[in-house]
Image (tube, rainbow, N blue to C red; front, side, top):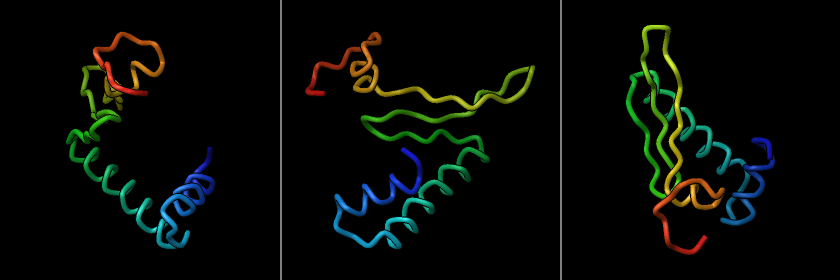
Length: 83
């Protein structure tokens, strides 16, 4: 799924105009970007955490999926809810 398809899907599910959904999603992505620039963690419950790992060799962008996502893909998880 690309960004345009994502916007269309969200617009369809929320019954909001694509132009509004595009503004909201792009603004949200920019907020994540700005937080990462400040080396702040960004956490979404039931999705995961984006963070920066500063190492001697350089800075690494990381994503740690939630237990729900780990369970969905069969990775070690303590999640017991509905998938």
